[in-house]
Length: 108
Image (cartoon, rainbow, N blue to C red; front, side, top):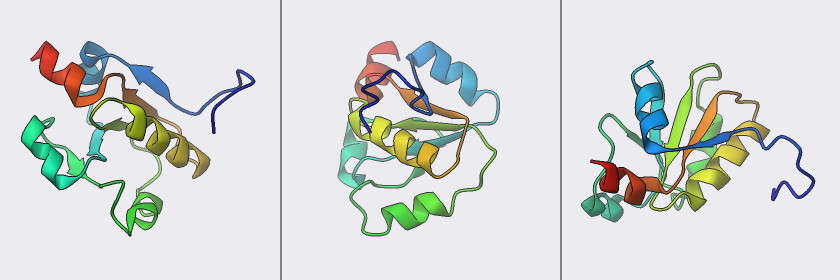
C-alpha cells in the first residue's frame, strides 16, 4: 500500500493544470470527500463517491474498467488511497489530484 520498494503504485499524482487537461479528454472525475465538504468547493462534473460511505468499496467495484479516472479529495490523501484501491481492482488510467480541492481552489 505504501509503495516502499519503488514499484509501480498504479496511478499518477498530477497538478491542477494536468488534471484540467485530462478533464477535457472525457475523463470521469470522482470526489471521495464527505457531502458536507462540498461547502469548500467542488470540481465541475464530478461524481460523488464518499470514502466514508458504507457502500464505498462496492461502488468502486461497479466502476467500468477502461475510462480515465481523475480522483480528488480535500488534500490528496484519501484520493491517493482510492487510486491505489482502484489499481488493485484492475483499473489502469488513474490520476490523483495532488493537493486536492485546496490546490484546485488556489488555481481558480
